[in-house]
Length: 316
Image 1: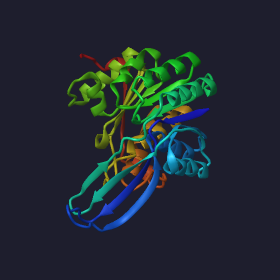
Image 2: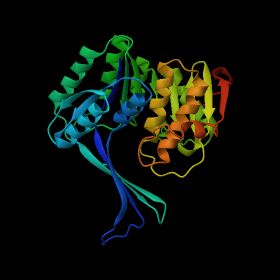
Image 3: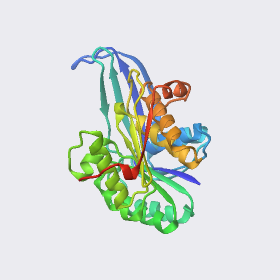
Image 4: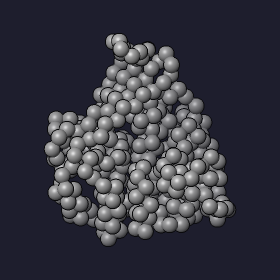
């Protein structure tokens, strides 16, 4: 079984406007509402790629029910825990005149302690050896980043392949439990180790440090500069294709889900990384998630450099 986990679900409102001025009514050119949250995006991409999965997390109010209903319409199973309050609504605005993108992201509901306990007990009950669990995104109010460590312990005990895509520094505390895959971006990796990363050598050094500390695989997202995959055996480096960026909010989720789909189906790693970068770029070049219609064309612009992990020197 494949599970995704979004502890802080969201509805995302995407707005396109020609101009954005204060103290006046700004008329929009287009708008779109989407069920969101990083794990939800992973679920949607996996489903497009033919991989059935179940979405886990907390839902609150009518906005939470909207996401639940939306996923079920897409034939994605859900197992959300109902909590008080309201699942958040985020706003992303593209201003055509300036080319600027504004991201307004809300906190999410306050999660009672007993609901956190219920969630962890649910994981212990449903997860089975060989399953995959992809935990993505921010945490709602009331949930400590230490929950990532608790989830890691459960997955380690039950022999579940854990994927983590989260910015919290507590991810480093999960490394002794040998997570299957981590997906930081360059800013998150730098923040975890409290350093400045400026070169490809820097990225490789600290990504390899994650491997040495226990991570089985690392997928490092570099935005417009592509992505790097690192395991104990290999290093793969890929560039990003060219195109006009419309919205970057879901590109990393698309990258991760597409790469994970390739790993689950035992596709060649280099081809998997190429397709994942192309799919992530496709999402960045449109208002919503990719439909994969242009992924093959974008992949033609991507070159994958393959190295042996032992050939990459590390000095940190």
